[in-house]
Image 1 (cartoon, one colour):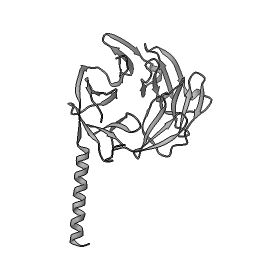
Image 2 (cartoon, rainbow, N blue to C red; image 1 turned 120 degrees about the vertical axis):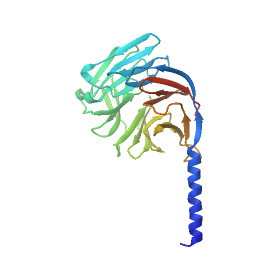
Image 3 (cartoon, rainbow, N blue to C red; image 1 turned 180 degrees about the horizontal axis):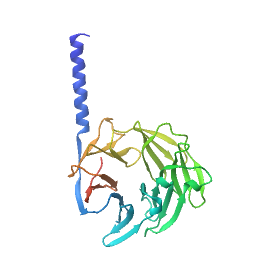
Image 4 (tube, rainbow, N blue to C red; image 1 turned 60 degrees about the vertical axis):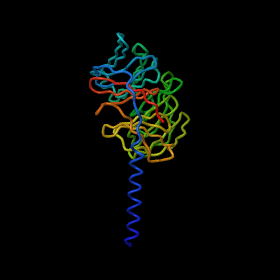
Length: 271
């Protein structure tokens, strides 16, 4: 290759690198709106009524001002997942015992389901609340997404078998989202329609906002990404005060940063 060709190739490489750096360094200003101490091992989130949910020593609790509700179930072991989509019917998932517990708004047990006792063989590795008395389920035995009616005890498979291992999943009433180990992002609706949404950035932790936006952390920095952006490389750093954090939680433009001792809530407006 000639020296002239090398020169132009180097220029193209430098220009591309500068574009990537510029697109990755857009900023979103986060304004602190509240800050309080917390004694918990894990922060689970808020509901629309202003209650916060957390886990301490495997005891699940709900607090607001001086109100405290608690639920514990020693026989089922560790709580692996909390679903707060419906604060009147909270989902606790105990993966080691292949079981789920549904709680009412005062954390009283409404239903306990042991999937190992179901007529259809089910080993649950992902779960979430869906519509019409149904739960989203990922059955590790057949690698398929399913719906389980917990009132009728009916199980229905809605997806074809997944090819790659699930790295992260998140659900809403109508959609099961997942990211596989290659960082490919998919969705499946209650009718079984599966959609490839694209590839996500490399992340330490992530939270999906909708079918084209997500927040993620990497090396204790927090970012926002919209896959519909005209610049496919563009993502925006969210400026927060914490230099390190254990978890973040986003709902209704409020970003909650959880550390071992406190929670800071920020108001952010995503682009």
